[in-house]
Length: 88
Image 1 (tube, rainbow, N blue to C red):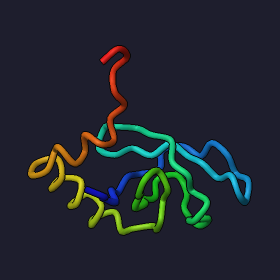
Image 2 (cartoon, rainbow, N blue to C red):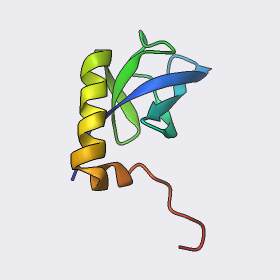
Image 3 (cartoon, rainbow, N blue to C red):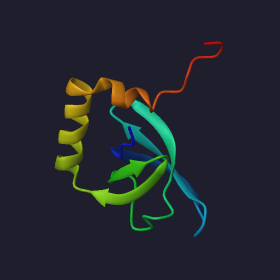
């Protein structure tokens, strides 16, 4: 299933116009995300991420509701965010 997941920007790593990246927290899972499409996004903002690319800035309350729902009702969808263990 293709799914866009909200997460909170915790760190900006690159600030180039075509190579903007940051670390995004998805309810405990932190991943590097391409932020090029959301130049207005800052640390602390919530963004909607699809296949490693932030596609929009979203309201914090709505982002928290979606993350809570996914953690309770569809944890298998969040598994797509996890990095496989070495050798497994």
